[in-house]
Length: 210
Figure (cartoon, rainbow, N blue to C red):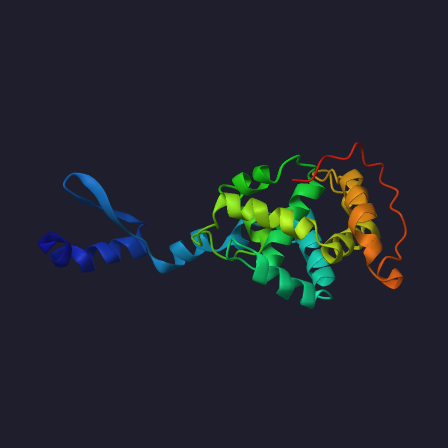
């Protein structure tokens, strides 16, 4: 500690001008001194967006517009989510499962531990923000994917913008799953909320929602 106190100013100067400084204690790394601009760049998830026109950036805007009309549903679902994050975060995670045709919600949750672009898409702003418990997050994804208002909003969003998403090579939207969920949950909604043209997107075999 004495050495740290004596050299702190020197090490801070090195960190600002040269790069991160690792301070050892008992021959093991103990503290890392990082200049704030460096830390901000590392921690800010927007720095992981490769291109402002990236497909996920465009999709995030469309999904947020769709969810903006479902404030009551978001509030109710947020109160029921066990993972401690807002329902909008969980819904965006479920959207990732749909647009990448992933068979299990667990795959999305695991990818959020290392895919910073996906983490930004879900709604996080800083890489250092801890993720919710995996099991609780997966259960929350099941919860939102069984809500008729959410299913309808996501279905309408992806259907209205299907040409945009079909042109994005990295997307493989599972419209089969969306059709299955919509047919199961959405008929209970008022007819005016269900009026949307069917997408011409092929799809594929539906997967079982988890």
